[in-house]
Structures are given as C-alpha cells and as structure tokens.
Length: 114
Length: 116
Image 1: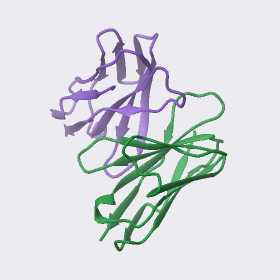
Image 2: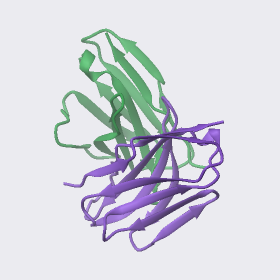
Image 3: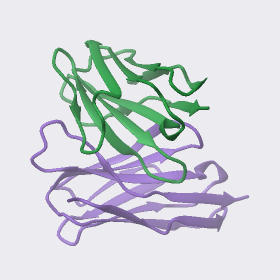
Image 4: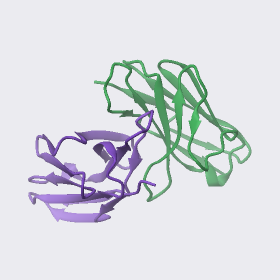
C-alpha cells in the first residue's frame, strides 16, 4: 500500500529565506508526483507536476525534484514571501491505476514571517 | 484556466438529514471526477471516483450507500451524504480531470459540512 509522508509537518521561516519541503513515498511505482498548495479552508492549487521519467520541474521561485528510486521528492522555494504561507501537499499517482487517483501526503504547514 | 466549483461552500445540518454537494467543471468536460474528504489537521483522503455514465468506484472503508454519487453529465457530479451524523462533519473536496488528455486534476474550493 502506497504511503506518502511529508517532513516537516510545520515550518516557520523569516521572509526572504530559501526553504526545502520534503516528501517521501513507499512504493516507487508511480506515474507522476504533484505538489499542491492549500490555503486555510480552501481547495487545492496545483503547483508542479513531475512525470516519473523526469527529474525536476520549475515554475518561478519553485523547483520540485523527483528521485523515484529512493522514493523522494523535494519542493524548493526561493526567496520566500509571506504570501507563500499555506499548507503544501505532495501527491502521487500509482502505476497501474485506471483513473489516475491521487494519494496525498500529510502536508507541511508553512508560515513565512514578514 | 480550468475552473471547478462546488456548492454549497458550507452547510450546517441536523443529525439524520441528507446533504447534497455539487461539483461542476465550468469550462471543460470531465468524464472522471473525484471526491475527497479532509478531517481537521489531516490530509485529503480519496473517497470515490465518479464516472459519467457508470457507477462510482468507492475506496475501501467508504460506505457507498451512505455517500451516494451521481455523475449526471460531463460537467456535474453530486455527492449526497445520507442520514448524516456528527462524525460525517468534514471538509469535502471534489476534483475533475479534463477529458482532453491532461493529466492534472483541478480541485474545487471545498464544502465544509457540520452535522449537529
């Protein structure tokens, strides 16, 4: 059974710092991995999607890497801003599934202090 | 961009009543939609996969007779929580996967259900 874990559970940093969020998954047989942002009481916004054949994806100040063999992904946020404060979720789509269902991690609650 | 809406955004009901939540893809068609549940301080858990024109597929431990799913069209899926109880209080989020071949899912804003 695929399990997705995120470390740390919570993180507080001063504005301007670079930071790394970690995601690990127990079964390397995945189709892709995705990072999401969730603001309090709201739905999810997709940040980056990495296919299983890819090593990383970048979007603005965000960079996500994937090491499928070791079951790890990282989300790097450069020059953090207070507006980055949110819960960050990673999710994998297991191989063999017919409907691309997502298995979510436990989330990292990020607070960027002004 | 692809937009998914949910209605209502929040609902409070008495124990024993049924609650219907709608999920709509506003600018794309979605044969497949997903329903998730999120309890406080926990991550999202997939409840069921909604398929237009066929029965929904439920995850292990989710009662299909309690959580009725109807995928009425290519842009609408509904989740009905029947005979709701306080333990059903949660944040329900839907997502829709576009039919045009994109792999990502687009998520609705969620519906917060409180059963008294």
